[in-house]
Image 1 (cartoon, one colour):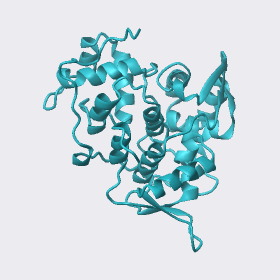
Image 2 (cartoon, one colour):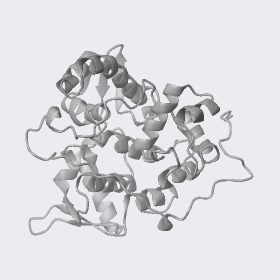
Image 3 (spheres, one colour):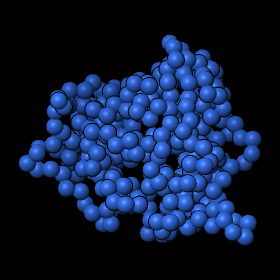
Length: 320
């Protein structure tokens, strides 16, 4: 029996706006990331955040509660503090702040803690965050964001270079940030923030993905190809990648999608063959054009196909 309390009034279920009537943009990140031989120290953007989670790993049950309650507690035109929202929902201030930070970087809420179009879509279509394709997409939103120094580079550098990593090795990998942040700040925040991110994958929101496994008290293993990712989820991730790092690009070379910094193949930890299979499916569906003749190996995008329209169709159950 399902004992989880309902998130919504069953007499007034949420009605999403039609996907074709709304959209949501991605903020570009200005970094030079495709030069060979770059190190972690070379690739940190100017506006980078060291601490996001406030030592609390985000959990689906908390995000679901926040999504269900935000429009009532903090409606558009009003601004209620995150601590007050947390208080009304019975959540301590640090947990509320950390969860809201994660939700903002997952594009569910804006800086005023109002629901975005995507937040409303998730609330309507996957209120318990139990859709595995959605979890892959949310993982990509966070782990591909170079502004989230620890989160993104755990996958972009640390686990991309070594599949079994200790806590100490993780801390050592980020010692290159000395000078960008003070030793005191790093000593205070680095370990706790890294632990919260790791627990997100081993115990909390992203544990169903199987990307990281805690082998013992201080050792983690990273795994590749842990699931068949739906083609529309691949496309939504590719379009986020394009909008973030190549804004306005009408095409991208496929090798950039496979293993470039913050690319879908690298962050989703999938072999090239699975990405190319998804691209073929998307090409046959008319959502992209794959060009492989005359020396080309690239994807050409369609102007009307956005990350939001793709993930909306996927969550609504439409065929790709």
